[in-house]
Amino acid sequence: MSELARIPLEPEADGYTPQVVATVEDGVGWLTFANPRRKNAVTYAMWCQIPAAFADFAADPAVKVIALRGEGEGSFISGADISEFGRRRSTPEQVAEYDRVGAQANAAIVRSPKPTVAVARTWCVGGGMGTALSCDLRIAAANTRFAVPAARLGLGYRYAGIKALVDVVGPAHAREIFFTARKYSAEEALTMGLINRILPVEGFDQAAAAYLAEIAGNAPLTIKAARMAIRAVTQDPDARDLDAIDAAIQACFDSEDYKEGRAAFAEKRAPHFRGR
Image (cartoon, rainbow, N blue to C red):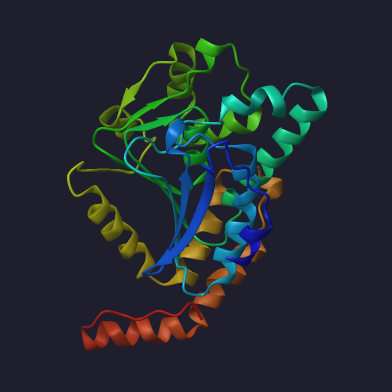
């Protein structure tokens, strides 16, 4: 993807390069956090890559859903890569810059015009939880563990991150997650609404692909309108753009996909939606 090439990556001494890898397969735009040496912790350069990758996915009509995952089986995302904090976050100016690129990356995920799914396995910790909460949906392997260990590290969490957690699990669960800083099983995460689905460890990739294919096969304009309306529910009333939501709903009824959906239903076949 052309945009990604303009982001300066930083190889380590032995040539190893943590990076974000963007690929498209069967209607799914895969964003892979590739830093397995540090459980896919996100570097400054990786944060910088995310907005460009999402811009490319948004512009690609072949992409129906965007899935975020960590490279390999060891972790989803373990948070920010603290090994570079000494040279990236040692002055107020550096902290401000680091926070700026992190906020831009998070905004790119939250504001994506296409549905987003966090595909987690083994560990989803700290900033990894924050990234997962930025997505519309979260699925996880049965052996995945979740935690926000800020209280064990003396870290302060910004309001936006706390609000994202409260919006998903509610204030009572959010308090326990932060106050105890303990690790939660996938079953506990499902019970509190932190994730949407548990998938088996064996055959996880195939099960995740099937889940994503189900989304990718549905009408994009319908999903877009629903996402707008659902997001408005959690916004302050003054921030809700109900006219835009109504326009998105009308666009569904005016679309070729609406005709295709009705025809497919009448002909008892699977619909082929094009997002127009």
